[in-house]
Image (cartoon, rainbow, N blue to C red; front, top):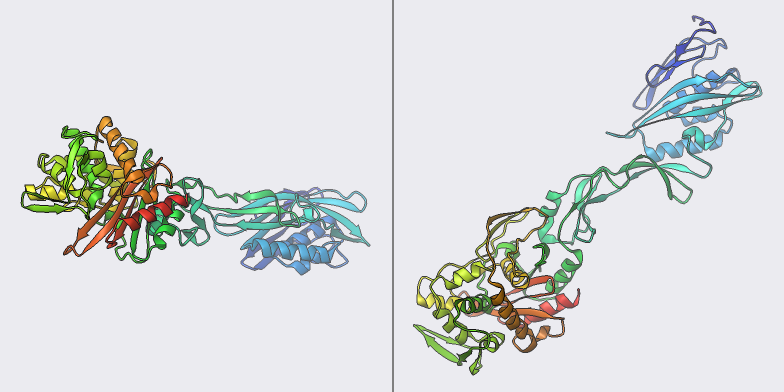
Length: 540
C-alpha cells in the first residue's frame, strides 16, 4: 500500500462526496440498500478499515471505524468502536427503528491533533428518510485513548449534536387538516394514505365535494423529544404540514344538529341550512330512508303552502293588499273551474296576516287568481327559485316556477301545488333571501360559486311586511311548535303529490343568521316538520 506523507492531504468519504481533511489515510464507503462496499488505502498502523481491534492506535482510525459501521447500520460494530458499547448500541438501534432510514451516509471531516488522551473529529451525516426527506447535519466526535486504543467517547451528541441525556430522535408523521370547517374543525385530513375524511360519518352528502377540494399536505418531521415524548425541537420538516388547509363555510356543529334531527325521524327527512349573510351552506342532512341521493340539492317537489311566501309577496308588491287588508277565508271556494278548501277551518272575513299565519288556501288561491299570468313566476324569481348557480363540488337545482299557462294553473300554483317545483336547497335559499333582504349566492367555498342566472330580491318594504307575517306563523299560526325555539320566522306547508293520496310536509324559515328548510317526503302533515325544525334549533 502506498504511504502518504504527513504533510499531504487526502479526502475521506464515508458514503458521500470527497472532502479535504488532514489525515494520513483515505477511505471510501458507499452504502447501497443495507450493504456496503469499501475501498481504502493503507494506514501507518496497518489496521484494516472498520477494524475495532486493540491495535486502533490513532484518532482518525477510531472515527473512521465508527462512521463506517454507523453508515452501514451495524450497531454491533459501531458500538464496539465506542467507550460505552451497551449505551451506544441501544441508542443507535432506537434511532434507526424510529427514523427507519432507507440509507445513511457519513463523511469524516477534520481530525484534530491529539491532546494527550483526547481528540476530536468532525463529521457530516446524511439520512435518506424516504422520497423528499433528506436530513443532513454536522457534528463532532469526541475521541479518547483507553489502554492504548482510541475509541469514540459515547454521548447522545454523537448521534446528533443537540441530543442530551434522556433525549431521543423520533419521526413525526401525522394526519394534518386539508379542509376545515368555518370554526377550524378538520373535515378532510392528509396523511400517508392521501386525503381522507376526518370523520367518516360527517357530511355524508358532501364527501366527494370536500375531498375533491382538499390538497395533500406534507407533515413529516424529525423531532428531538424528552423521555416522555414531548417535542423539544423540530430538527427537520414541519409536523403541522406544508400547506394551509382550505376553509369551507360548512359548520360541524350545525351539521351534527341537522343530522341528529333527521336521523331521529322514522320517515324520509331532509334538512338544508344556509347562512343568509354570506350564502354559506352550513349543513345538508338527509336520513337513510331517503332513496334519492340528490334529494337535498336537486330533488324537485311541490312546496305546498310554503309557497304562500311567494304568493303573499306578489300580492303585496302588486298593491292588491297590505298585511292588514280584510280578505275572505271561507272553508271552500270555487275559483274558475277549481274548488279549493282549507283543512277543516273557516275564518270568515279576516286579515291577510292572519290568513297567512293559519295558512288559508282559499284566501291565497283567490289572491293568486288576481295576479298577472307571470306574477308568481316573477315573485319566485325574486327569492332565487329560478336562479342558476354553479356551486363548486355540487350539482343543484333550486326550483322551477314558470308563468301559469292558464287561470286554473295559476290558482293551484298560488298554494304551492300546480306545476311549481322547489328543492330543499331552493327552499333554504328562499328563506335566506327573506331573512337577509338580498340575493343569496349559496356556496361551499369563498368565491367557489359561479352565478349563471342571478336574481334581485323583493323590495325592502315588502320584505319587512312579509317578515311580520312569517313571525306570526310561529307565535300564533301553524308553527307554534317552534315558539320556544327563539325568534323563529317561517311558513309551514303540506303538498299533495302523485294521485293526491299522500302529501309532503315542509317548514321553511330562519332564526337570526340561520335559514333552513325541512322537507319530509310523504309525511302527510307539516307538524312533524315543525317538530323536527325545533329539535334542530334546540340542539344549537
